Length: 548
Image 1 (tube, one colour):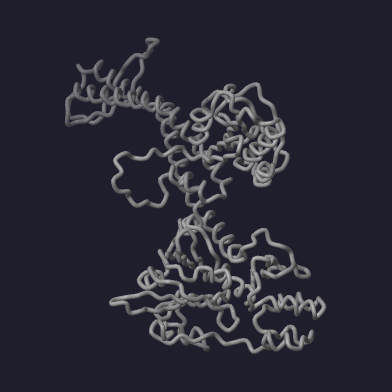
Image 2 (cartoon, rainbow, N blue to C red; image 1 turned 120 degrees about the vertical axis):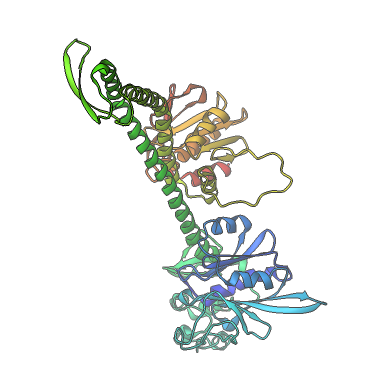
C-alpha cells in the first residue's frame, strides 16, 4: 500500500488534538513506537511495508506489542526525554511525508527542555528521528551512514537534515491559475491522487485541492483507495473505492501489523501444542509397547527355572541351560543369563523382583493410558480451534492456558490468587448472552460449568470446533431468537475446522440433552437436535442482531 503527502496532512490534523497533553508512557517494539496520552496513544510505524501514523487505544497497543521480538534503541531515548513532556505542536514539514512532533517539559529549576520527534513516513526510507531544540540528532530508529545514503547521514550527534525536496508547483500557485496540463506537478500530493483528479473538470479538481492545507473539517473526508494507493478526500474520487476503515493510518499500519502479530503468536502456540501432541503420542506408543511386549513373563520364567534347578547350579557362572516344564507338562530347555557375582538363589530373587516391578509398571501404564489419550484428544481439538482464532484477545487466553503468555508484573497486596478460567469468549446482547469455548477445556467449561439446562448448545456437525452456548431471556421474540440462532451457528462455523466454508451443517439442541463422552468429534453425545446451515461470517450476523 502507498500513500501521498495529502494523507500525511490529514494525519497531522488528527494528531493536533493531542497538543497541550502530556506523554504518560513511551513504548517501542519491532519497528514501531507508541506515545501514551492516557486512554489514547499516538502510534508511529517505520516498517517499510506498513509505515504510517495513527491514534490507537491502550488495548490495541498491548495486542500489537505482545509478541515483540525486539525493542528499538530509540525507545530508551524517548523514555528518558519524552515521558512527562507536553506536546506543544504538530507540523507537516515542507508538505512532504514528514511529521514533526514538538515537546516541552521543565527540568531542574524550571528550565524548559525542548525536543522533537520527526517521523519520516516514506515507505522503504521511513524513519523516526529524535532531535533536540537545535535539531541535532539524539537518536534515530534507523541509522544511515554516508555510504548508505549519498544525500544525508543520520547518526546521533550530527545535525538533522531533511530529505531532498520535490520541486513542483505550489498548491497556491496552481489554484491561482488552474491548469490541467500542470496538475500532475502540484507539490504536496501523490502522483496517483493527482492522476485521479486529471479525469475531472479542472474546476472540480481545484475545489478538491483547495480542501487541503487549510482549516477544512477533515471529519468529512472519505477514506478510499485507488488501486493500492490509499488517500482521503472530500468526496469519492474517480476510480476510487471506499475503505471499510475510515482511519487511514490504522488501515495502513495496524491491519498488517495486527495480522502479522497474531499469526506469529499462533505459530508459536501451535508449535507448543504440536510438541505436547508428539510427547503424548510417544507416551502412548511406549505404554502400548510395555503392555503388548511385556518382558516381565520372561523374568518370571527365569526365576522359576533357577529355583527348579538350584541343586545343579554352581556359582561363578554367567549362563546356564536349564530344563523346565510348561503348563501342559511338556519339557523344554532355555539358556538363563546369570550374575556370576551372586548366588543362584539371589539370581532367582532378582528375576522375581524384576517381574514384579515390570508387572506393576504395566498396570500403572494401563491405568494412565486413558488419561494420556484424553489429553491427546484435547490437544488435537485445541490445535483445530487455534487455527480459527484471529482475535488477539482470544489468543491471549489460549496462550495463558498453554503457559506461554507474556509474564505479568506481580500485583501488590494481593493475598488471594485470581482464578484463571479456561479460554472462552462471551458476547452480550440486550436480551441474550453467548458463550464460546476456545479450547477443549473451554468447551467443557461453557457446556458443563456455565450452561443452564435450557440453554441452547451449538456445534458444527461432524467437524472439530467450538461449543457455542446461547442463553436468551423470556422477553425475546421469535424473530430475535432466529437471528441469535443464526449468529451462534455462524460462530460455530467460524471457530471450527470448517471456517471459510459456506452452507455448513450446524446442530443445536438444549444443553440438557448433551452428555460428555471420551473421544468423538465434540467429546459429547447429544439428542433431540435440529440442524441449521451457516457460514463463518459471524461479524455481519452480529451487526444484524444489534441493528434491531
